[in-house]
Amino acid sequence: MKARAIVVHEHGGPEVMKLEEVDVADPGPDEVRIRNHAIGLNFIDIYYRTGLYPAAPPHGLGFEGAGVVDAVGANVKFLKEGDRVAYGQGPLGAYADVRVMPPTMVVKLPKKIGFEEAAAATLKGLTVQYLFRQTYRLQGHETILFHAAAGGVGLIACQWAKALGVKLIGTVSSPEKAALAKKHGAWATIDYTKENFVERVKELTGGAKVPVVYDGVGKDTWEGSLDCLQPRGLMVSFGNASGPVTGVNLGILAAKGSLFVTRPTLATHVTPRAKLEEAAEELFDMMVRGKIKVEIDQRYKLEEAARAHEDLAGRKTTGSSVLLP
Image (cartoon, rainbow, N blue to C red; front, side, top):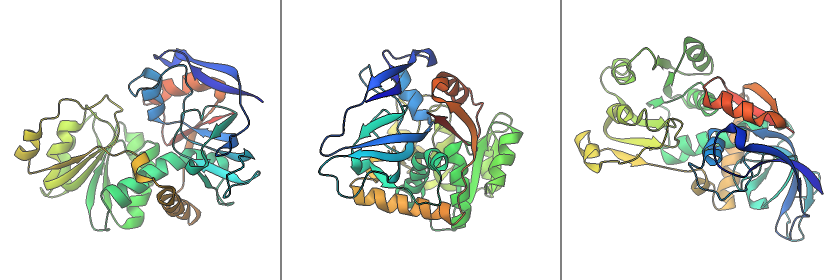
C-alpha cells in the first residue's frame, strides 16, 4: 500500500526532510502495521536528522506515535487488527501515515487516553519513568534539579515529581516558562538567562545542594550541573540539546565530591518487553488518574515537519508538540 512519509536523503538542516509517497509492505510474521493518528515530536528527531546520532540515509524520522493496528503478522498473538496502540521507541519512521514495526515495541492504549495525548506523552513519559523510577529511584523526600523544566519531558517530570512528594527545581529560559513549570508542579524555578543556576541551587537548598541532577541539555550545563551535586551525588546526562558532552575528565568527578555519572537511554530500561509493559502501565495509570496531564501546545501537519523542527530547536515551543498525518 502507499503512504506518505518524511524521508531524509542526507543529513543537515530542516530542509533535508522531504515528504514522499512510499510503499508500505504487508507486515512480516513478526511485525504489525500501524496507521498513525498522531506522531510525537522530540529532540532526538533532530539528532538523527543532523547526523549527531548515526543512521545511514535514506531513512525516516521519529520514534513516537499512536494509532490503530492495521494488520498483524502470523506470529503476533498479543495484538490484533483494530487495537488502539502507542509506541515510544525505535525503529525510525514514525513521521508517516502508516508504518510497519516490531510488536515488541508497541503497547495497548487505554480507552481513556486519546491518540494525540499518547503521541505527545509515550516517549517523554517513559523517559521520566525510567529517570525517576529506575535510573535514580526517587523516594519522595528529595530535592532535585531538572534542566529544561518547561519542555515536553520537563512538564511531565514536574508533575511526576509533585505526585511523588519530591521538590523539583527546574531551569527555564523565560518568565513565561517559569510560570508554566510552576503550574505543573515545580517547587522552584531558575531562569538561567538571568541567574547563575549553581548559586541559586545552593541558595534554595541552604547550601546542601542536590543528590541527583537530571540533564537533557548537555554541553552547556555539564560543568554547572556537577557543581550542584552533593558528595557522591549522581549526574544523569540523558540528552544533548546544546550539543554532546565530550572529553569527560574523571579526575573532576573526584575533585567535586566522588560523583557518579550515567548516560542512560530509554531502550535499555524497557527491554525485555515485560519492562516496557511495566513502565507503560505506570505511566498510563498516572495519566488516567489525572496525576499527569499532557500539554499539547503545538500541532503541525506532517508536511510542516521542517517548521516544527525549527520551532523546537529555536526554543519556541512549550510543552509537547505533535504532527498530524
